[in-house]
Image (cartoon, rainbow, N blue to C red; front, side, top):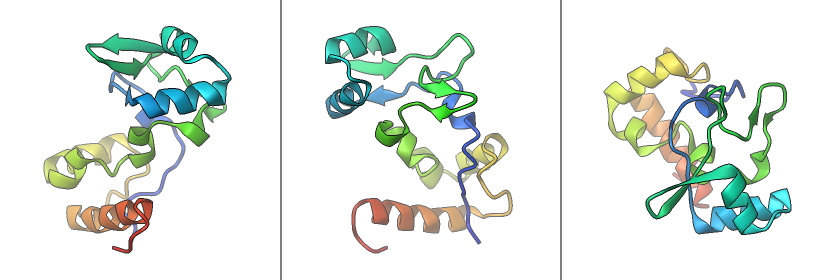
Length: 132
């Protein structure tokens, strides 16, 4: 049984989630968009303290989400986007996991938190090049 299979529905691209991006991500996305870093930051980000976050459009979606095309920066999307739903809050807290089931169509409603934790370990291990 799988606990998650992305449906590319965009549900995780909606809302004020605060997609904070690192300096390396700013560089990578800027290059992908063929923009100077300063232009990218001014046009597509907001400053929150010392951190930069990707802007949200008027419709509530990430500025890089297009309802007909999906993520416009998919090959270089931020780490937090690549990790979804295998994020610490859901891995560590079964109540958060249960709430996420209602929000994300890609989450298998029959999967237990333990199923999800097992899949998270495997997924995160594959990102690090190690076996689970």
